[in-house]
Structures are given as structure tokens and as C-alpha cells.
Amino acid sequence: MDRARIISNLAGRTRLPWDALDYCLGRRGRSSTIFLAMLNRLASGGSLSADEESALYYGLLVLAYHQRTAALPDLLKLLECRREETDRLLGDGAIGEVLPRVLMAIGEDNTDDLWSFAMNAPADWLIRDAVLKAWVYFALTDAVPRETARAHLETFPTAVELGPEDPYWISWMNAVADLGLTELGPLLRTIVESGRIERGPLGLSEADYRDILARLEESTESSRKSVSWRQRAGYTPFGEEDRVKYDFYNAARLAPGTSQSVSQTLMMQAAEDAANQPYRIDQAGNENTPA
Image (cartoon, rainbow, N blue to C red):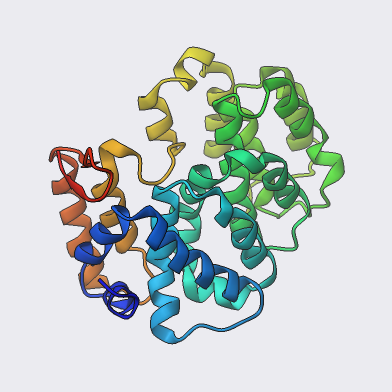
């Protein structure tokens, strides 16, 4: 399959373009060459054609599947500096749901860069929340030492300037709770009770506050290391072997430009596919085939 056909197929928004994705998933070197170059061009201030930009949405997912850590610097640059292009490429739905898992798949070698972005990047809270969640994943898997995670999150309230209404406060609280950092519980309560975080319908709801405190106290280290807990909490890298096709169906419904009717169809197909056999790369390492 040549580059033009790959781009054309992946640019569509009426179905999951599985034939082209199947080809790319089975050819790590070829697909990486195509999509890393496109990502670099967009992150560096260049432009892509409309079809290339649409195809790059799936290209990012392919790079995540192949765990191409080389994609992270350009992706962070895009997220930080090219908001209009980021919105067109991902949209709010994918930024909130898909982006964290892409970052979990490609960020292990650059956890310091993830933390720096989460703390300092001039990006809006939804993007920073996605990056922070990926960083928390690496703390859960010990790529970030627990003591380092605790120290970083302890400095958050003084290192980041946030207004009381900023939802990024809740991102921080979720990070503390999901890591089970009970030693930061008093700090968290002080920040909330002192009024630094707005409470009420437009801020931190009482139900969310109770949930955060419950997760902070009840979440044990053994439970956080279980696959089922991480899946429920959203801490699974994109494209893990036992749910590859499901992940692509689920991401396809969030692709910018996907109609509501197509999105609903893809949701149903994702649910059906979740019960099927895993999708695995074959022993030759060339093609991906059903198990």
C-alpha cells in the first residue's frame, strides 16, 4: 500500500479504516517514517493537506501502538504551541480520552518532560490534564519513583499559579488520590478548606470532593498495580495487545469530523469487538492478524 493510499484511507470519517490501519500496524518502520515526518512538519510550524491532517489522527494512534518514543517531543511541541492545529487534529473528546493513553504509550523515556509540561506549559487545562494523567501512569508503574512523585505533587500548590475556579486543581487532586499519597491528604484538605479551590456547581462539587477523599484513603498499592483497577481508572496505554481493535474503534468515534450517527455505530462495534479474540502481530513480525 503506497503512502497516498494510506493517507486517503485514513482521512475518511465514515468508518474505521481498518485495512489501512492493519497495514500500518504490521509495518512499524514504514508507518513510523510516514507519521513521524508529518507530526514533525506540523509541530515545526509547517502545514499539512486536509487529508494529511485527518490521517495524522490515526497516525498518532499507530505511533502509540508501536510505542515510538521519538514522537513525544514533537507531540508536546504541537500541544504547547499549535493550539489551532491541535484542536483540528484531536478535538476536545480525543484530548480528554485518547491523548492521555497515547502519551502513556510513548512517554516512558521522557517522564521529566511530561512533568515539566504539566507544570509550566502555556496550554489550557484539558491538555495539561492529559499530560499529568500520563505522568501519573508512569508513577503507578514505578517509572517515576514514588518519592519523586510525592515531592513533585507536594510542590504543586506553590509552584503553579491557579485561580480558585481553575479546573486544573481537580487534576492535581485526582493525581494525589490515584497514587494513594495519603501523606498529602492534610495538604489537599487545607487547600480546599482554605478557599483556594472554588466549591460548588462551577467548581469542586461536594460529591467529587468526597470521591477524591475516598479514593485517597481506600486505594491500596496492590489494587493500583492491578490491571483491572488501571483499566477502570483510565491508566492503560493506547493499543495494548489484548484490546487493540477495541481501542481503535473507540478512538475512531472521537475523531474530529465524525458524525454523530457514525460515532454511535462505532461505539456499538467497539463494544462487540471487546468480546472477540485479541488482535496480535504474527510471528514473522510483518502482518497483524486475528489471534
